[in-house]
Amino acid sequence: MAQANPGPQEAETPVENEAAEPPKGWPKGVREVRYLSSADGTEQPALFFAPHAGKPVPLLVGLHTWSYDYLEASGAPYAKWCLDRGWAFVYPNFRGPNTRPEAAGSELVVKDILSAVEYARNQANVDPQRIYLVGASGGGHAALLMAGRAPEIWAGVSAWVGISDLAAWYRECKQAGRGYADHVVRSCGGPPGASPEVDAECRKRSPLTYLKPGLDVSLDICAGITDGHTGSVPISHSLNAFNAVAGEADRLSQAEIDFFVAKAEVPPSLKMKLEDPDYGPKTPLFRRTSGKARVTIFQGGHEIIHEAALKWLERQKRERPD
Image (cartoon, rainbow, N blue to C red):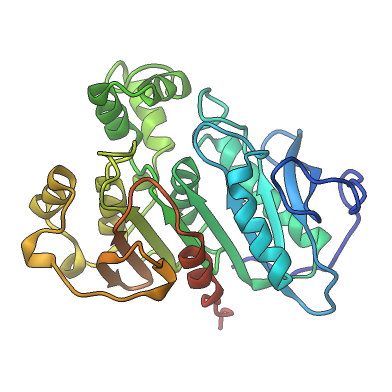
């Protein structure tokens, strides 16, 4: 369990004036900062917002997508949610696009994200029971990774269309002719199967290595039914991530996962009638819960439904240890 918030402290480096213009595409109030990473003692960039609040507030940690960095404006809906509700917000760079060894789930990435949380807690009056993590695609990969690497930090982790196994994704992208296969090669030192060292790097950077049954974190895993067909990450990655943390009786069979992936349909034996207004027209088609984990397959592709992700997080609260 994370220690209690010691209260606002002086930043490691001065932050820009709150009145400064935000990066292009981001709401006013968000500013660029630098924080010290425990990974290697370097100053790392992030976007940040701290409300003027007399009481502890939730903190949302947003994660950028696979090929982009912390200035990527697709993360702006996370920031707008926080400004509207008076939450603190941090959007770290965690070594930028996942095209080199320093990025793509490296130890530097893990410690950068944890250091960003500490920075935010030192700058804002953060409720330690309501620290949330959200990301899609490459951000979904990092969210799943951080759920497994530091479950004690998060009140809730919402991971959308994320990669759970880098070696499997390499093979899938190679077969489909997607350039992401080369990103895996550049990040892990070679193609999976090339050497024990490369395979070890792939495992170290893959969420499935750390996701275990009974993982003590509220985890929401979501994927669009057509991803892998109209998008770049087959939904087997989300279904396998759920299986990794689920109790034995709740896991999907390999035949069921294969049907989902091949047909972009729910297997006949798993079809259900679901209603969830937070998903809007992207209706959930399949949902299963096991312990603190939930998986949802919805009518969509390689995307995140921000309202569904953030409303689910808002309902989560980490209990204090006895």
